[in-house]
Length: 425
Image (cartoon, rainbow, N blue to C red; front, side, top):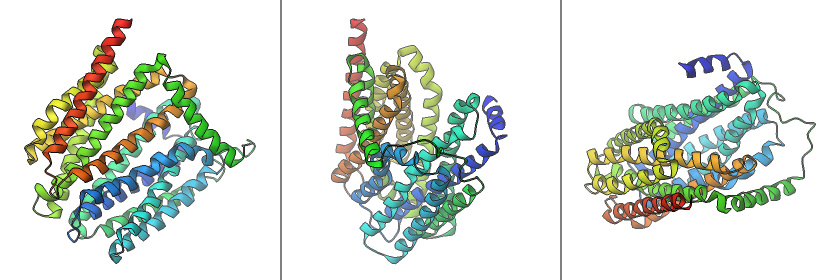
């Protein structure tokens, strides 16, 4: 297989091997830590979980990416990246261990959330640093392949870390604190692995001069504003509409994620451990939908056009989500998880394609930063809305129908936009 051949070639680069090891350990620890948070917030036998608690946990996990992400590069251009991996992972190991202690100490929830927020905030710097350091350890000819394989390997490591956390939670320990401490150990291993690289290997170059930090941060804010203006230009209307559609679909996915968590915890399982097993199965089925979307979307978007494929995905979700969701039963819910994984990821791939092909290269990175902010804020906002609407057991026909209507609006709006574009041309 070409992927295996490319990876074998990349692994000949010593710096790449060591940087990849840091990525795998860091993102594996992320997967462990995030499942530990979900298990503690949603599936602890001693806690009566509410939708509001789930929304708070999602805010902790996602808002640091949105608020810090666009500005992380400014600091990464000043700090030695090897040191970011070393001290960032050491700090996360310490903070994660602190989270475990807080879980055992029955402290107020806000203190637990502050600890978790700090861990996920540092994560933004580590992930951005891993991407920024990649050109320092592979040659230009193989950089595109490395950019494709390295993040994919990291995502796989996070998934495996989450699976390991599920295993430990269900088979070894009765408390999420043990899982968090496993995550802390993996963060520590990532920090120690970074010591195998020379401090100067990953850059940035000392010879480069940088503007003052305050000036650079203000410049980043101006750059993001310029990116939004660039996106709003008439010739890039399709990219703007696609981003709007994807933001609303992400909103729907976020609301249904909270619904799924509450159903797994209360309505569809008799014990927290059974609920955790059901959640793991649902996430696996949804992941299968993501995989099918990656296979089907290039063909479908090629035949229909990416804008029409977004409309088809939204229409499919609008029709199938209430049909599968309203019974509030296990088998239809798993089918819905697959459908929503497929339609959400299919629309996202199409949106990425439209944005990449529509915007100028000089603005592409900044526009994807804006995209990232919209994506995560929509998810957190949906969780907050679901927290207000959901009953204690998660069975809310009103939420299911509301989400279906939003999907329907997205489908109709994108279809109308595409028809109008065709008539103009």
